[in-house]
Length: 210
Image (cartoon, rainbow, N blue to C red; front, side, top):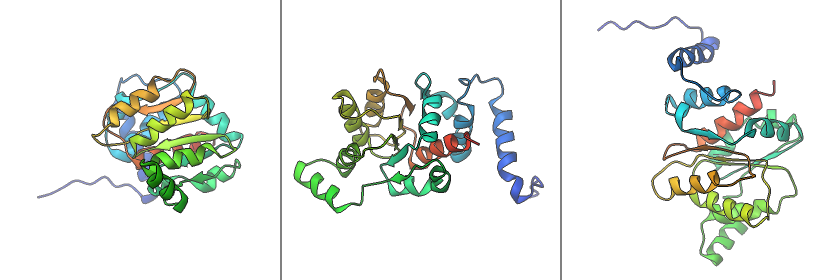
């Protein structure tokens, strides 16, 4: 069997990938200003459904970019999500990436309260005296707790990225975030998402600052 391969130099593979994505999107109308984020999610997953299921609150992208410029930090719900974010680029603006899921105090509090570590880690993050962007790619309980903390006026996130993947309470937790009136969000409606998608949305925002 003969297979025809494109002759693409290694340093040009990403550029060519984005060209293919743009070509295949064709006449799909993306919300102006969100295109780099949607395309990077498609690039990360090879899943064009993100052109339809990503939901952006009004001015979410602009607010997030301004927050990052002013030193906002990112809180993730997995070490995988944390590892995938371009921390060097975020540090250029004074920001850091946090993930408290492996902390002993978080594990102890979760055990005492009968909650998940994700819930306890959001409570720990709420005590940070910083501008915060939450990037949730795995745990619906993290989104539920964020919804509760926002609704109670305990935190005021600069952005909530709600893209957990799975089947149990995933859709419902995302809908809770979508119901928030004054909190910027980027949510992957439905079951799809993941820590890689959460990280790639963060990176897309960082690359948009160039």
